[in-house]
Image 1 (cartoon, rainbow, N blue to C red):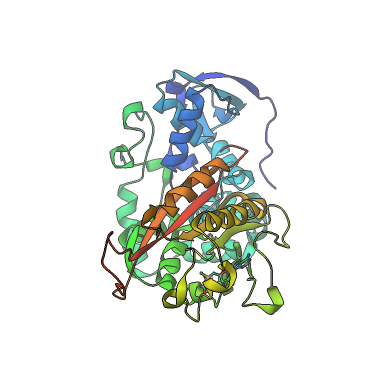
Image 2 (image 1 turned 90 degrees about the vertical axis):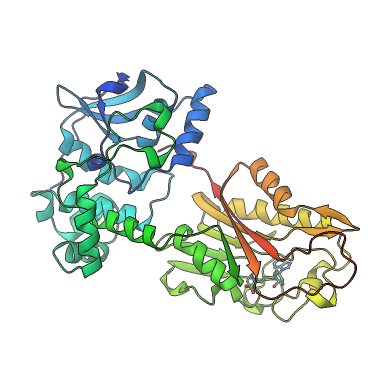
Length: 414
Ligand SMILES: C[S@@+](CC[C@H](N)C(=O)[O-])C[C@H]1O[C@@H](n2cnc3c(N)ncnc32)[C@H](O)[C@@H]1O
């Protein structure tokens, strides 16, 4: 049933100017500019990347796989890129793109999966395929395909229709993007893309999110912070481990039922899942998201110890360096259970020890970098309540904490 992949392929350098890289064959809703930039840096340092995949129709090469590598080469002002050249048309590139991204280390967002399904639904022949066949091609579940198909066939809300119309006029096209503009998404050339046809639901999702942005800083509580970050960083059907569950305050505003699996554990508060975060019972590379919120200050004292956190019980006699060491060990174990492309969320707070500033969030950043993690984002939470000031102030009283989102980078490349 599937269009057979023709195997007469060669690997050679192809001029960037001959490669057509348009949204119609890009199976991701948006380019991750951080990744493209990172690839560019690594290319500049001499790292060898796998060939991108292009389809040659006799005139131009249609990019099917490797948009981030292509972009990185543009950023560097390269003339050409190593490409696996297959004979075929833009349509072949679309099918290849819809199939390929599921196999890569870079995790697909829900919107990416919708996009892959829609790439097939938008084709007059492929749309006749059964939900199961489209699911097989795009590596999603068949109920997921059914849902996207139903919505695409007209069962959409008024706001979706509105965004569709707007989006139809502004399909993104990165053809001919100049290297000096490539790192700034605001400067992407925006043109009408007739080939893309009706706008995609995936892009509708992206635009709707743009209406309700996720910000880096907020005033509130941990539950609101986690719900906020989850919108961006917990993918659909994720395997999630909270290895310092405490009393589950983090999850008060998140529907954990939507996860594929949820694994709470704690040394003190969960007798049935009593696991030390330095020695977890999970398999290597089995989680998409690991949440880590250990006791974050040394010698918390009576004022800070409260029913939810019980920090003093596990940190008696510890100094700041011991706390950081505890973090290091937990992060190391988290890395083990994290899938490539998954994220490790580390909650922390700076502190003052013996009148000296201890910038925990910077120390943890260095540790994460040393482990090969990429600092994907940093959220700052300012507490609602006015903090109690005990004594004459020598430093500004800290009333904020941090949430790092570290990403385990793919070993295979997009
Ligand atoms: C700051 S609290 C976490 C609060 C939690 N995020 C919540 O939403 O309620 C720190 C938690 O880490 C747990 N903990 C401390 N040392 C641990 C260890 N070695 N392994 C597992 N859990 C530990 C404590 O029992 C405590 O519940």
